[in-house]
Amino acid sequence: MDRADVAATERRFVAHTGVVSRRIANETILVPVASNVGDLDAIYTLTDVGSEVWALLRAPVSVQQIADVLCAEYDVRPDVAMKDVHEFLDKLVATKLVEPVASREV
Image (cartoon, rainbow, N blue to C red; front, side):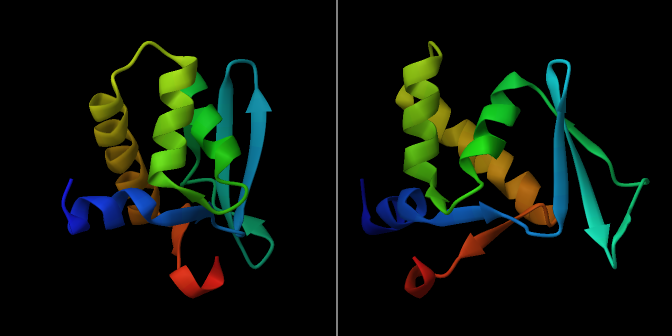
């Protein structure tokens, strides 16, 4: 693994503080909140695996740590878990549900 790959796996993320989450049935519901008002046009639902990742994001966590948990919990190869985690985090960052943690904040 080259330096860029290592840096990407060590990058840390955390759930955005402006997102309220609730577990309902087998899904986690995410609602971004601005000025104490939920944006009902931007409600997101997560499956069991997504919910497990979301729970890990309560505190700063690295891509590698998330992939390791998924490999331990599910029958998934490490390379597949890593790819899936990167894609999922990219979507969460794009929708401002999570944010990267600066290395000096860790």
